[in-house]
Image 1: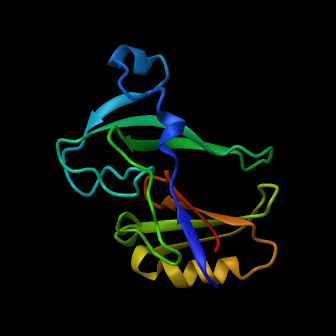
Image 2: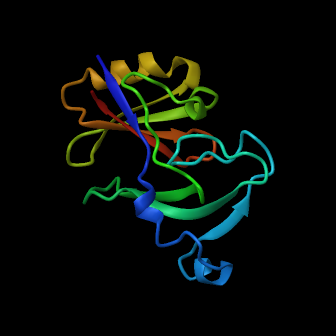
Image 3: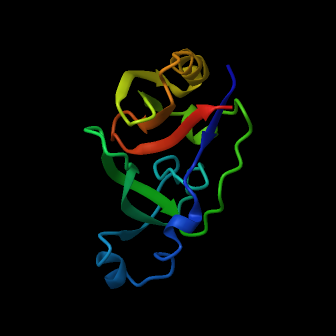
Length: 155
């Protein structure tokens, strides 16, 4: 089964780019500087920031559906990020190097299944979870910090 991984769209965060630290604080966001790689995974470009690169750290509602599983968590967005272009069945490098939590949801946002997989073993886990007919989409999270990483749909 073919799958498509997608990141978030830069346009969602355009209103925050270029704000002062005080203005960002008013949005419960902060500007941070990457001090290592890996360690600062951008949810728009789906790459790790380079040391010295600035990012926004903010809370993002990644499951806005009217469900008990409605959820938000902190994410990083590189200030110079461009929208990721991920090929069908491609696992971006930012995901290949991490332990990931996979969460399968129904169309109405109910959790149907959850699992963990090392990034190198992600494709088979995605295919297995998407093979269940009731699964509408998957969310990937970095398993240790728990933050949202990307969405997966059938291609």
